[in-house]
Image (cartoon, rainbow, N blue to C red; front, side, top):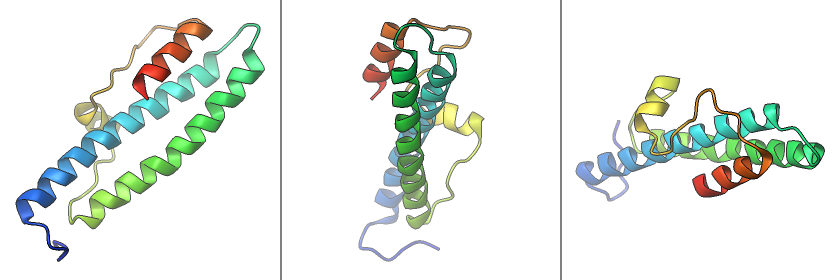
Length: 111
């Protein structure tokens, strides 16, 4: 059922498409942050471990809000890893485990 909120169907679909790209990006960023949380090591291990945990926890809230907004626009929300990857503009780096400094630089760039 399409919502009656004063937006044309064309604009509803366009908005849902943009939000789906945002959702793909947020999921990619969430997964990256989790990966770095699990794999950080070195002198600042505990500080970064806690920072990454706080960030992925906050991302969970954002992901849920974006997903629910898409649904409220009358469009089914994507929900598989393939769909997230297909819609995301951010890219993953499989098999790469950067230094602490590179982790921070990558996450900062993605944000």
